[in-house]
Length: 91
Figure: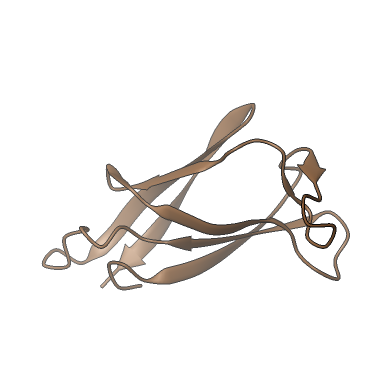
């Protein structure tokens, strides 16, 4: 992915959701994302439409990630009750 690029994660068991708009199930608590020490953006987090219990997290990498040094960057998704880390290869 390029710095500032958009990605999608899929996960199970990430907690309670609500339906504020009556359509999409979204987390009842705020989540945050950081990659390489810089804040990323969560564009959507909630249950994947058409799937039972499958969460989808659409995110944008920080545009400030150093593209001059390509390679893996560790990202941390913080949510109620804990945090998960994953690596993204930045080009």
